[in-house]
Image (cartoon, rainbow, N blue to C red; front, side, top):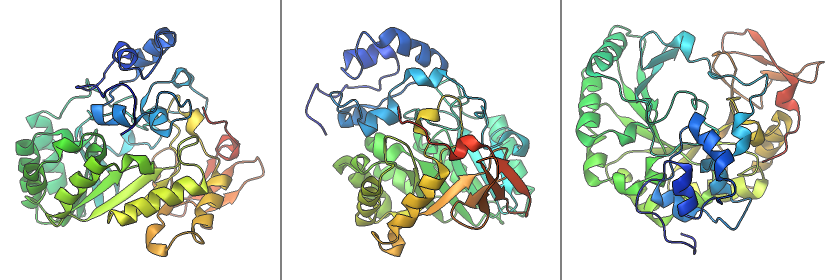
Length: 360
């Protein structure tokens, strides 16, 4: 943790709390309050303790503190950039690929990332599925035998109570064709005290489970986070990580190498390096596709193979992920790119994806 004002004792959920904690200035508060009125704010005491408010380029602050540019929506940005909606047969389920489905038991998180592709939907008001909604979601999964993996995401499923989480996993275990579960979470990093022995034990109540950690900078692997990961690992839970490539946060060879080496030391396998999804107000985080490809290619000479994640792009409109450094992507005459989805269909990516963007 950094020297400076003492970390707050509770999660900061509004601009006035951020001012009181010394994370933003009172002069900036009025404009940032407008951001907070549109997109949820939550900065846990752990995250607050990682931020250096004297550094205007602090990579932790960039991820979690509101910014006035969030109110600027560009023409190629969309409220549902990954196209979840058309693939949602019932509330809380997204079924895009035949063999796996997302299950979102809650749309609330411990923290709210300023680049989140679900930022129009997540927040304290996003809530948790009702019992009836959860029953309908599990009925859909049970009635769809092609689904062999369920991915718990949201929101952050690890903010659920231990009792509710264990109950959900037991219900998934009762569905014969569900072979594995994957949990996507930031909780071990941003609220590590929540990862108790009881929570770790609850995660073993269902099918074989993998935990995928959302992490973007090496400083997020602090001592308390490492302790939380150890508690999970002691229960035999394998750990993966996914990272979003973000301008001003980790878009340098040094930052990526440091992060992926830290993950390997922590016995967490880097799995995905995501290009940013074009959600509203996130343009300041964009890294041009060609530069992302070059950064990823450069890792090959800096890191062992098991420390290098797959560079992936979610095709806007809900057409799924593709590896972003393969023949599936090729430049187009207009300065954009053409990408081929899993079914062999071509999609145009606008020139803005390829154009350089100044980091905020």
